[in-house]
Image (cartoon, rainbow, N blue to C red; front, side):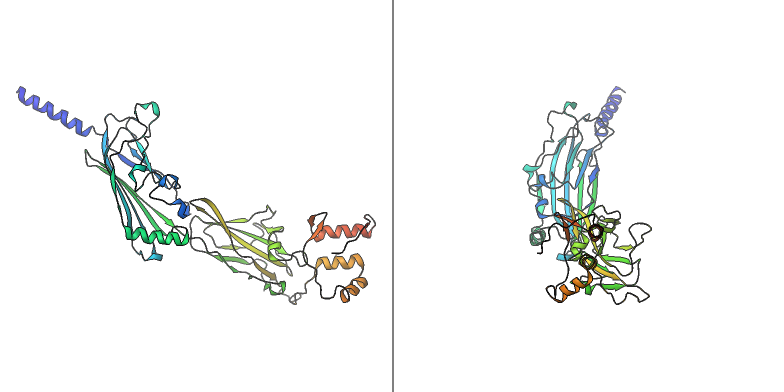
Length: 402
């Protein structure tokens, strides 16, 4: 009877040691899904410490104290694979697998892409416990491991990166698996990141790129649909800027787009946000912006914003221009009235102006900006000055001709 009881006690003690082992789990702490472009300098499996943080995982069990009742032996496997159609990888292809031999952890720890390396001397897994928790070393003591790299795949990927300076567009999968060596319990997590090459941004309508005001494309709608195209990118945001082009004031569409805008309005010097992955705007001044007017000229540009491994980045489209035709046909001839020219006539008189145009100024057209004491002014401000001269509020002291 005593022997049987002793045997039962030994069995219970042994089983208690087995089931008392901490069930280690892996959970996601962070994963940056906003990055859509990675540059060559920010992606390195040999020296990952300076890589941008893509993911960070917690290994442990939050139901246990920060220092485990007893150490746990685990092994860890990390696999990186990709599907890149531009280089013929129509299915996911394993690029590198890193395996750590069984090692002991005394508490929860964290692992991130800034730690995982094909060079095991670079591995440095930190414990997640405070310094006074009772763990002598701040880092897990590893037992080495091995890396299985598909040299052909790595070479193809490296050549593409070298040619473009960035990771090619595609799907990139990160898989981490933890094995409890005592219980053979496994815990794993997989995350897939979509990388795009947001380098294209083309305007569609209204208008087109123009060299001169006579090339401005006419439209009859004062509430046009602005449309552009680019590759699909969920986390890419778009914004638009629309400005009036004033003949005689603006010498180029660039000058106009840098001048006061009608969208956004009031002008804050920036672009009106359209939203993420949206490539169309139905112009509605009741929601935002000023009314487009018949007989006037306009320019517009789109800005695309996205996250890269080096931080936020913007790219701007070319500038499109258009003319709002009067559907009644009264302004369809597009007689271009230069406000500065009209003001000049008012200042010196119609007869004197016509004489100059037929003589010294023959063949010349007014263009460029108006400046007052080195500051660019508008035609409206010039009109105030001319009115002041007319009513003798101002007096001309000197006149210089350039």
